[in-house]
Each structure stands twice: as structure tokens, then as C-alpha cells.
Image (cartoon, rainbow, N blue to C red):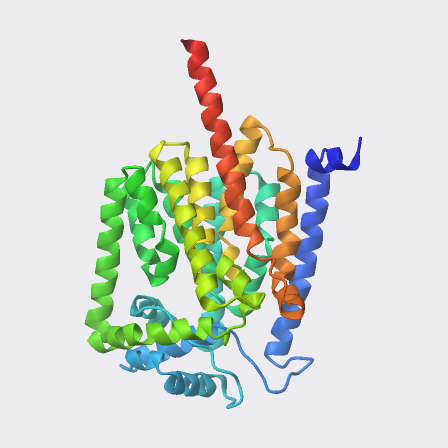
Length: 405
């Protein structure tokens, strides 16, 4: 067998090898997690100046909200000083808070606990929710473990981000949509805490005529917004809305390095493209993703295909998506693996999926050192695979209908 044939249909990728690779990745990630945690908390290999986690911004915003100063979370000076006071060292860098006051509702509860306990509770609870959704999508323990080792999960733990929560809400909503549309709508509505990840959900629900889920999602978002208004007042929302343009400038100016982004926009900026060009290409990608989602959902494709296309399309369409935000890709991969086991693997598909692990792990470092963007390849490849699966399913369905006639 030629090398090309071995890569096109990798029969060598057996369950035994998948199990071995999964164990290796788990060991490496646990060692990395311990090393980063040790450095962050000065247990060994101290760094100067000290640093903290992205989660520090959640704790600080929640602390301010508990003090009746929710609007101050959008003031960098006040937020930064709160973070320094919580950490106990005036030298740590600023971790910005760019979420709507809806997320401050959760942060305010978490901030009632000490920082480390709060962080551990949040990560444990959201990681559990993520695993439950992933297990609901694919039951195979080996594949479940392999997907859970995706580098985005590792990075989410390291920096203390909310990708587990986002993935659980989006993946859970899709998992329940056909059976329990009201509960699915509640999960979609709760995603208003990170609204840019909702960009294609209305497209899918409208195209698929999931009216109950759409209405419940809108109502859930409205209730959460009203609750935040009652608890935090108009000032918090006014501060958030005023801060949107500043937050946009943070990413457009490169203050958050373009190598952190895994979007078309970030890739263009990383290679030196101007903001207008990057936005234009991103807009084309977003429109293309929206059209793809609309078509697949309008045709009432199977849930596995609709879900994978929506998740992949969302990752393509969002301009500000960071390396840890790739975590929903694991749910899309779970759906695609389910379909591949039923209808067969596409040529090169196994190789493409395997390649996503090293790309996701190294894209940030490669981008920083070489200015070569690679992270955007993951959502684009994922969407391409999902659409090929959907096209094949439709073609097979057409043939079956023809044979019956």
C-alpha cells in the first residue's frame, strides 16, 4: 500500500493505537497542567512579575457586583486594582472583563468563595456539564476520553476560562432540541452570557422551524437580562454597552495578540493584513457559514448532521474566537464520528481529525514565533467535513427513495 493510500484510509489507526495516543496525551497534559499551576502560584519555578488566570477577571467582576459596583467591572482601572487586591500582589497584569452583566450574575455567586476554591468549583462544575453533554452525544468510552483530551479542554483548565460552560450549553441545546425543545431553548437562551456564540443559532432554528425552542431561547435571554437589570441596575448595562467599542479596539489593535485568535480575521491580521481586509474576509466566511447552516437545517437533515454543521459554522463565523474557544469542536466531532460509523469514513477524514490535536496544541506558539496562522484551519476543516457528511447523507437518501419507487 502506498503512503497516500495509507493516509487516505488509515487502517493502521486502530482502537489500540487510539487508546495509546489518548493515554500519552493525558499524561502530557496533566504534567503541563501541574507545571503551569506550580508556576502561577509560585510553588516552583517562580516567575517575576507574577501572573494569575483569566478567571481572575470573573472573580473580580463578581466581587465588585457583590459590593454593589457591578458597573465598575467595565472600568479597567478599578477592575485591575480589584484583581491585584484579590491576588495579593500589585504586579499581576490586568485580565479584562468583556462579558454582559448576565455573566456577572454567576460571577457574583462564585465570588462569595475564596479565589482558588471559586476557580476549582467553577471548573469542576462546568467540566462535568461538558462531559455529560459529550457522553450524551457519543457513548464509546474510548472516543469520549480521546475527545476530552482535545487541547482546548487543557487550555480552558489552565487559564480558567468558560469554554466548558459554552460548549455544554450549545451542545446540550442541540442534543435536546428534537426531544425537549423547551429545555433546549433554555440552554440556548443562557448562552446570552457570551452572545457572539449565538450568531448562527437563530439561523438554524428559523430554517428548521424550531419555533418553540426559538421563543423559549429569546424569553430566557430576556429574563436573565431583566434579572441583571434588577440586581445591578441600568448602570452596569450602560457601562457594558459603552465598553463594547473599547473591547473591539482591544482585539483590533493587537493588544490581545493575533496569534491567540483562531478565526479568519485573526489569521489575516497575523500575516500583516489590514483591519478592513480582515473584516471583509471574515464577513464572507460568516455569510458562507450562515448559508450552509440555513440550507442543512432547512432540509431537515439528521440531528448529527445539523448539529455538526451548526457548531462548525459558528466557529467559522465568529471573528473573535480564541484558542480555548475551539472546545465545541469536540461535540461536532462526536456527531461526525457517529455518522462515520454508520455510513463509513470519508477519504482523509481520520487523518484530518487526528491532525486537529497538534494544530490546536501548537497554533498559538507557532503563530507567535512565525506569524503563520494555523488555528483557523480547524473550524474550516470541521465545517468542510460536516458539509461533506450532509451531502453524502442526502445523496444516499435520494438513491434509497429512487429504489423504493
